[in-house]
Image (tube, rainbow, N blue to C red; front, side, top):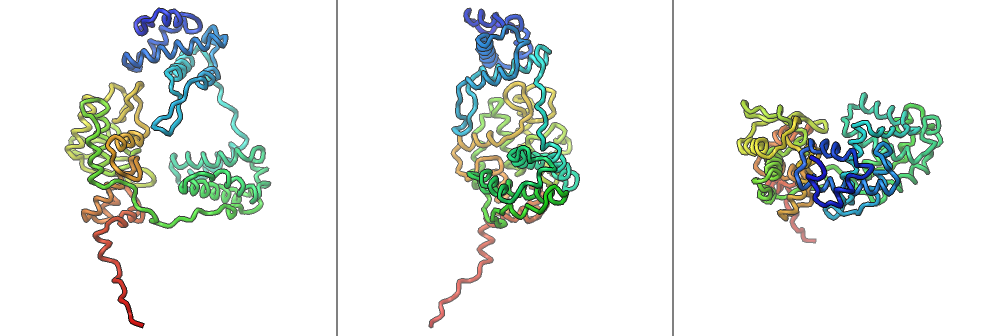
Length: 419
């Protein structure tokens, strides 16, 4: 595949053949072709490459060996911004997509040297020591460690030169409270709670290792929360079933989305458990399906319901791209990587169907599933086992919406006693 096969404008063809893309353009397109882009996407990508090449010429770049990642960043900054789903700002130009493709190609082909990693910050030894402690002695999962790293990275970065072990003793209560006032401003209650508890944990660790002169964890206030103070955030079961009418099962994406929604509504698993589902997790001869444990929960092995098996088979046979990946569910765009999240997918289905729900993510369907199971009279222990909870206390939140049983436990209204 060459440029002339994709774009038919003579002006664009001539621009593509000029430096710095000129002698590399056909090789670049041949490498990109292996990703499996369709004709329309390949055309957009080629036009984006030409636009980026014109930008590089204006910057005085005459050969791709002169390309640096800073050129990609400066080009992206010039592109228009659009709002995704009315909330998320992202570049809305095919040139951005093409520039990043070109950078990856030049690094892989040895045309340019990849960027050197930035020097480690001065607080890196302290941060890694604390994270290693949490992993070895507290048994935290990689996902939890990632969140802890994010919160403490911001705190240590704000300290500047005082973020090393010898200088940490100079941090006082006033600074901590001033930092928290800035860090928690405008955050949700759950986010504030995460920031405060993480910093409290870190300061307690620093005190135990002798890096601070006193225990500063007491300077971190607590977000008042009460166990089971909220109701499960999900639609009613009847409304949740309406989501299955949204996907168009005659298309590749529709088959994938229908299978994912059916898995959520049938088993009540987490979205990440569906993303990590692999071919080996389905035992077709025994009619069972296995979901990996998450958040300290249990491994779940349940019968494979025929309707679920048929939906997955339909996607595997007719909708799933051809790839060597063992993950079942893949993205719909080349290079067809495994899904890392399905929240946006479920959110689009909620918006399309107009199903009312206080929360539009995949977890809303987990709440709907557990609430329905309890309403059908299933024991709490059974629900906890099926949903993968390691503690009944986690599952007990769903008892708050079992109104039939709740009506049997209230005390009678006291009669009026004459004075």
